[in-house]
Each structure stands twice: as C-alpha cells, then as structure tokens.
Length: 386
Image 1 (tube, rainbow, N blue to C red):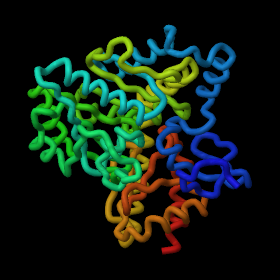
Image 2 (cartoon, one colour; image 1 turned 90 degrees about the vertical axis):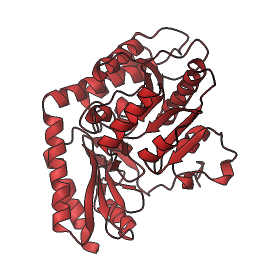
Image 3 (tube, helix red, strand yellow; image 1 turned 120 degrees about the vertical axis):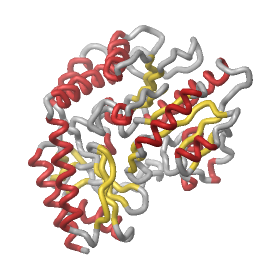
Image 4 (cartoon, rainbow, N blue to C red; image 1 turned 90 degrees about the horizontal axis):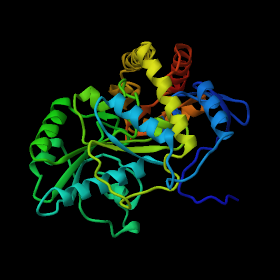
C-alpha cells in the first residue's frame, strides 16, 4: 500500500544510482538516459563538480529565507544577465510553474502602471504548456488540461492556433504574449523564426510584453544559453527552471524592467544558498561545454543518429523535430508510441513522449559519444517488435 497521492502514473522501476548518462535500478540493471529527468539533469548524474558544490555548501549553510541578503543570489542573477547579454533583474523560485506565475504578475503590474486603462490579458499558443497551478493551467493552450474538476479558472488568458492569430487578436486588454520557442509537451515543435520576429516587433511597437517560457528549452538545451538567441530576439521576460539547477529544484523569472516593489511577490525557499550555488556551478560547467565546442559536437552527433533512424526505418518515422538536444521523432502511426516507449524501457533506454505521436529526447548536454552509440543500439533493438 502506498501513502502517495495517485497523481502520477509511475513505471515500476526504482533507480538507486547513476553516473553521467547512465542510471542503475535496484536490480542492478543499467539504462542509457535520453530523458535527463525531463530535461533537468543537464550535466547528467552524479556530476563531480555538482557533488563537490553540494558537499561544500551543505557544511556551511543551506537556507536562511529571503529576509536576509544572499550573495550567491546576486552572483547568479548577474551571471544570467551577462549570459543574456543585456541588463535583467531576477526572481528565484523553485519550479517552472512558479517562474511563470511570477511572469504573469509582472505582466499584470506592468499593464497597470503603464496604461491609462489597465491591460491584463495574456495570450499563448495552442499546444503550449506553462505549468500546473490554476493560473498556469489556464495559460496552457491545451483544453485537455482544463479539467472541470478544477474550475472555475481565472480569466485573462487566451490561446490561439498560430502567431498570426495571436497578432490579429491583440486588443485593448492585451498586455503580453507568452511562447515556448520549442514546445515541449506540444510535440517538440520549434516555432517559425520569421513569425517569432514579427511577433516581437509588433509587441515592441505597441509597448506590450513578450515572455518566453524557456523552462525546458533554455540553459543551453537548444545549443545557446537561451533559445531566444537562436531566434534573434530579446524578450522582456524569460522564465527558467529544469536544467538551471542540474538536478536541484530552482526556477527563475528574469525581466528587463525592475517592476516589482516590496511585498509584490516572494518565495520562502526560492534561491536559497544551496540551489543558487549549484546553479552557478551548473552554468559554469555548461559555459565550458559550449566554449570547448563539445556541446555543438554532441548536438551534431545526436541529430545524426536520429536522422539515420528516419532513413533506416522509413515505415516507422516521418521526420525529426526540435532544436539542439531537445529533439523529437514523429511516428507515422500513433499506435506505436506506447509500444516503442515500453520496449525502450525493457531494453534499458529512457526516452519520453510528447503529443500523440512523438518520441521526445532530452539527453544530458554532456552525454558522450559512447553513451549516444549504446543508446541508439538499444533503440534499434526496441524497434524489432514492430
């Protein structure tokens, strides 16, 4: 009998340890990890530098709350700003949903302060995913998440089929638009660059805010620190989480403007001494990975293997989607999604699902060529059942 709530459909696997891109279960079976805890373990498992930071910081201080200054918070906020290449202000929290909640409040305060008539509506895209709090659920552009069990939902959130439709429906109440530049839960779909550039320009002209949800696609997941750089835009607000902490829970909302004042927002745990130190170490290691050229090599190698899968299995796969090491394989028959996923587990390979017919791959960013090779060997073995 379990004492846990039944909100997760968990696989009957218990992991006990891991190293780099390999996990070991309680029976001693090893798994190549192409999922990284849903994009969280950006440096894999039991990373030496992260372990050293955790060990060192745990002997000093873990948490004091935000009633007092935390120098590591300042360092991390500055680091993020420098990597973005323009001045930003940061709020630290514990998750992506919390980061997006912060973005909502920032946008609405901006809409109160900067216009004669308050603007408060935020538009999003169909198939987007922005969190599981009541507000971020409504912000999410998927009706399946808008269960009547949790109604009534707050108003002021609308989602549309396309960026052009978002632009067409901007009205006197619209204050911001939020987009995932690569939709994670919505099919590993990278948005069209010209459409994003058009949206950015329209919002700038109208003095409205562009928010990019980079909870999954940020922190070098697409090859650059933020996917926004790949798109040549500078959003007004960016949200982070997942890979930022390399495995510890930390989220961040960064803004071009310091909109909040005392009492507007807060988090007891947000950005404590432990997680900000680990996040700094994670960013330092990822910067090295990028500058050395190893990240780009890993991306090229992983994509090459995916493209070979499409070539070798034309009856199973339609195309590849995504950017960087946020990749998807589109299946020609959606019935194969669960079959392949389960077979991969049986054969010691961790992958993810997205949408109704897409296999999603989010490996650690420092995955090596041998781990990639072995992972795809197991992937091919898993396809023999079809």
